[in-house]
Image (cartoon, rainbow, N blue to C red; front, top):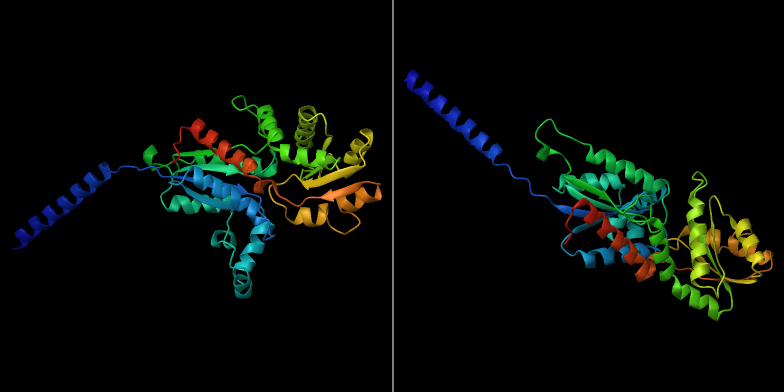
Length: 330
């Protein structure tokens, strides 16, 4: 009996090992695609429409691809996390999507996707220019693609991770940033017509960055392109942070003899910067400063993301990133 039991145990072990080896050998990787929209974010409820419009455009273009939103701003994410725990706030704002209330960082969003079996990801920023958020995303992509495995390559956490361009482009030979600037300038034609009808100059307020010396240059180049493309209108662009500041913009407007301007945010959302820094009643808002300097100011509080043609820029850049990486989005 003991001998029979021994042989039975050996047979069972052999079958178990054989079955395991066959299962491992037959392991087949199925690549799953997703898009992560990496947005700076906003805490202003109506301004969310600019971000949600971009998401809607992406979903319409790729209805069979999972699309997730991530916010790059730590402060904004924490504000939404607090709101998500506030039952009264949720009751008062049923229009806020659940993925906004529980929004995460790009890395956390990517980790959730990987946990759900997605290994092929296109990260599309909705930033205007190549600032710190975009460079951080670039670092993330490099790190994710360098993740390996002690096993075979097919066991790597990610198969492909691609990064799209911001609205005004980035460095590289394949997609010249000058072409992105030209595309944006063409899209701004409705603003141009509005300013011409008002017999005013067109003044945009961008975000900018005081730590990136070349960041303001892209805005200056866009303004120059628009003045050349629309010679009947003077267009100027300044930034909340860094160069060119409001003082530089006023100098430009004075050089052109402009005394009336349409003031509009050059940001994806018309959020806190628009409400306070641009159009607020305080003495240091752009509207107040301009009026103190003798300008007539017409304020327009619309985010660029609300413009369907501008939202399509990010859709097109995501498509370019996918194609460059050999990723098929459906």
